[in-house]
Length: 312
Image (cartoon, rainbow, N blue to C red):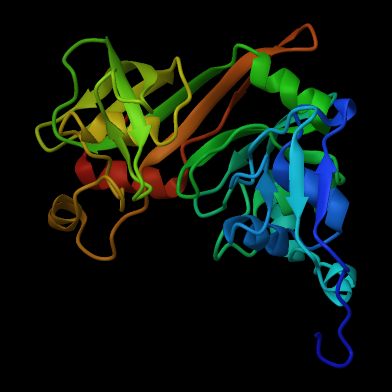
């Protein structure tokens, strides 16, 4: 029985996804169904209270027409709790970081430390910020790791979201790595898989979860201790650049997951530097027009380059 003053929906709901919602992400589907704060929706999914076709799911899983979504009972007062507004200074910062603006598409220069999507311990992600600034139909069309800076596309509406995912977009990155980079331009090809630990590893092509990853790599500045690499992604796998570099004994400077803390300490001391990965360019076709955006190298990465005597 609920405590005095609480009310609970009477039963679990099982909702069948309609044809017009085919391709919508689970988190956005639940936001509309439940009218809860996004952090609460993510908590329900993470705890396994939401099921898709009787199985656990992830927030960004795309639903298909005919899928059955199990929605748990929700306290009514939680549903009615209004979400707080993002801080004004973050919204002002985001507005200043628009590199390109067109119908249903904006490309922004994401700063280091901003999360692309909501998650545990994240108060404000680019989902909430974009929706607060431009409207509830806006959301990031792809992801950059929280500590990666640079070009990120934000689209309006599910149709534009899907259009971006189906497009052929060029993504160019700069990465400062420990070690001597390749002496000539080359292609790195691997098969990557996410393990139960959450880490991504290079695996055999026969691994059941293996996904092909390919990057074009060019060394812009090469030293004995560190090198500045340019990487053009031909696939978009989770942590692709970070894992491909680390697996070749070229860990990214400041990478707290796949990097080398001792090398960072020896070269830069304390505190440990930021992840030295920057999405410098995003280019492609949008509604029949060519789109190209470049994000300037941020000051904190320029400082790292100065300290290593490397400059692009």
